[in-house]
Amino acid sequence: MHSTLKRVATGLAATATAVTVASTVGATPAFAGTNTSLATLKTPSYALGAGLAYFYHEGEHLRIVDRDADGAGVRIYWAVSDPQGNVYDNGTAYVGGAGNENNVNMTVTDGHTISFTLCVSDNGNRIQATCSQNWATA
Image (cartoon, rainbow, N blue to C red; front, side, top):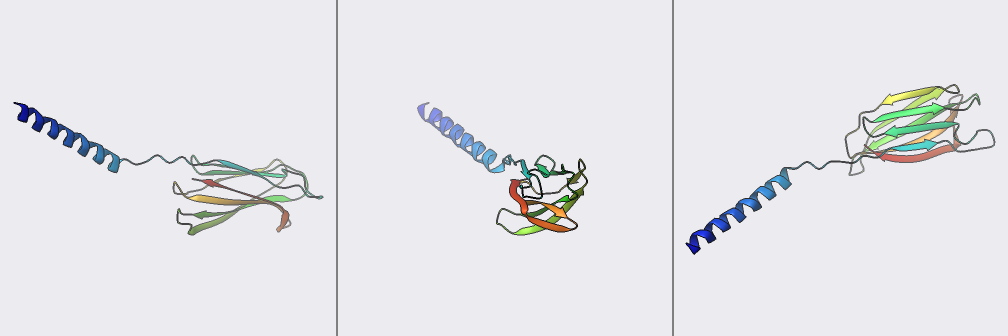
C-alpha cells in the first residue's frame, strides 16, 4: 500500500510539474507600453511649448498641437526601432496655425521603441534650438 501511495504521489508531482512548465512556456507575457509628451523649447523668437506632442501607446496614437500664434508651425519626426535597435520606420507630421492639431494613427508592434523629435517649423525650416526629444514604447 505504501508503494502504491508513493507511486501516486510521484505521478501527481510529475503531472503538476508538467502542467506548470507547459503553462509557463505557452503563456504570452503582457507588454506595458509607455505614453510620452513633448514641448518645444523656448528661444528669443518662440515661446516654451509653442508646439506640443502626445503619444498614447494604446492604439499608437500621436497628437501634435500648434499652440502659439507666432506665424510658424510644428513638425514632429519619429523613428521606430525593434528590440535589437534596428530602425525600420521613419516618419514626420506637421501642423500649423495656432490652436490647430494633427492626429496621426501609427502602427507599431508592441515592444518596439519610438524616438520623437518635436520642433518649430518656420516656412519649412526646422528651428533646431526649439527641438525637444523623447521616446516611448508601443
